[in-house]
Amino acid sequence: MKPLKRKAYEAALEPMQIELAAMARWLQHSGRRLAVLFEGRDTAGKGGAIQAFAEHLNPRQCHVVALPKPSDRESGQWYFQRYVTHLPAAGEIALFDRSWYNRAGVESVMGYATPAQVDTFLAQVPAFERQLVDDGILLFKYWLGCDQAQQETRFAERLHDPLKRWKLSPVDVAARTRYGDYTRARDTMLRATHTEHAPWTLVDFNDQRRGRLTLIRDLLDRLPDCHVDAPPLRFPRLRRKPEPERYEVLPPLPPFKD
Image (tube, rainbow, N blue to C red; front, side, top):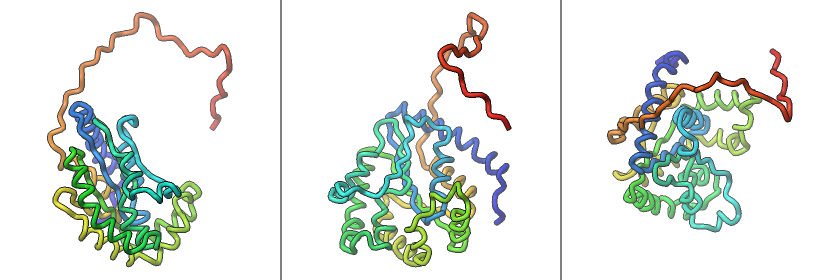
């Protein structure tokens, strides 16, 4: 299948983003809570998918959760504790750019967690997610995949592009030779945590534009009826001629010259 061209991608994405805006209005109206987990291969495109999802949503309502390495104090907490504080409140959306599943992925493969800790996590997470769902949270779990050849191409782009260089870490470099290990860790995770109440959905992200559209369409199709009419808003004409901006205390910067 040929890569999706930008023009076709944007034409397909726009109506979905309108549906996402309607979904956000429904969440506020109903008080429901939405949590979406974005997991997957390094370079698969989690950040771009989250950006496409949240681009036209109110950032006060839609929060992106991308946690750094745990502090010493957090390392001594119950494992799920630091993630619980980022779960959505009524009417909110939380988009997790990696989540508690770090323990079954990078922590497992790179040896940051012991096998016993990983086994405990895999045993506990179905019950943890059952509590979230039973409490009314709409929980969606997506795993974004790409071939190793595609991953290598994207790693090289990050290495040579100064605007993407921050995305390439020593852990990413070390992980390049562990593609098969990550596959086995993923499959172990899926067998333990793909449940009826919190199922996984796998999405092919070899073509990132197609992947974003596939993911967003899947999520929208699995939601209940989200139609809520936008509240009427009066927008009367100004009673005076519009005023130009004025600067009296400090001058503004001069315009950029191209």
